[in-house]
Structure formats: structure tokens, C-alpha cells
Image 1: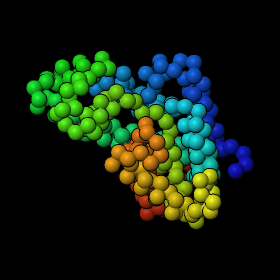
Image 2: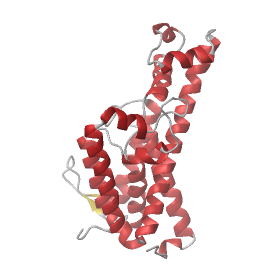
Image 3: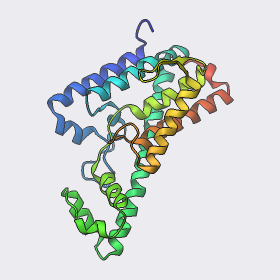
Image 4: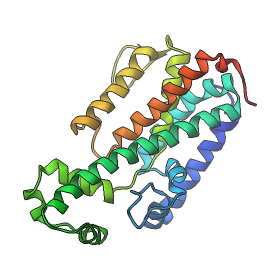
Length: 247
């Protein structure tokens, strides 16, 4: 890829700095900068942005930063630094919004079940805010309903993956015939085939709960970033906006 482009370089540096800080101040960093559910006491408005620089482990940040460099570099060279920044953070914000919207659905679905059983909303909030729950709740609804309810409230989102899924979509639409070599497949796959399949698998896992790539993945955050990336690329191409650089 040659010399690091400006936006990619700055994003890599900030992500690495956050990762190093997290290795020293893990619990406090996750509390302050991860994206918590808005009704959780740990939620702060800045987390909508800061969670994009947080990662859950070494392999998490390595894969994300490699994808950012590999797929983002040709886009920044085509668009310019400022346009790439705008696209990247727009996709990241879209990712956060869809992830939070889905969590609202799961939270309210579980809350309605508990309230209808005779527990007040304030009692439920008090219980789950202390990190607890009642095993009896699982007698009131399917296990997945209660699991999703508790996870929505208690599990924060971290990672640049949502923004990077937007970058993947933009790369696939800009360079559809580029051939990608994957570790787990012996043959190259064109971007126009690989990227839609990847997003489709995330959507499948998000809807069904079946973990294809492992547990603890915010699938709808990935889908949200991809969706915003697609809409922006579609609009830009339709209006010939893609030809304009923002240096």
C-alpha cells in the first residue's frame, strides 16, 4: 500500500493509544469509553464516538486495524483525508444508532414481560443496575428474551468494526473486482461477492442468535455501519459526489 495516508495514520495512532491505556486502566476505561445502554448509569453521550476506539483484546484490534489499513487506504487516496474521515465516522455513528435501537427493542421486550408479571419498572431497574437478576424471570418468557434483555442493559459495545464495515462496503462498491485472499480459503474472491456475504452472515447471526464467528459480537453494529456506508455510497454515486475530493 506504500506510505500511510493521513486519516488512516491518525486513526491507527488513536486506536493504539486507547488500547495501551486500556491495558493499564481496563475497568475504568471500559466504564468511561465503551458504549453503554442509555438507561445504564454508566452511559455518557461521548461514548457514541469514543467506543469506536475501544477494543476487547489484541486480536480484536489487530484485525480491525488491518482492515482499516487494507481497505481504507485506497478510499482515502481516492477521496482525500477529510472526506474519508466524514465517511468513517458517519458509518461508526450509524453503527452505534442501529445497535442501540436493537438493544432498545430487546430491553423493552423483556421489561414488558416483567412489568406484566407484577414487578414495577423501577424495581427491575434497581435489580439489574446492581448486576443482579431473578432466576424466576426465566419462567415468564423464553430464555432468549431474558438473555437479550439483560445483555442489552449490561453489555457495552466496543470496537471500530461498525465504521470498518462501512469502509468495506465502500471498497466493494468502488473496487468490485478486486480479488481478496483470505486465510481460510485457498482461492481469491472478488470484493463484490465476499463483502455482501460477510454482511449477510452478520445479519443472519443477529436475527437468529446463531454465532458463526464466535460469541460477544455486536452483529447489528456491523450491519448498521454497512447500511450507512451503502446509503452514502449510493447517494454519492447518484449525484456524482464521488468525484469530489476533500483534502
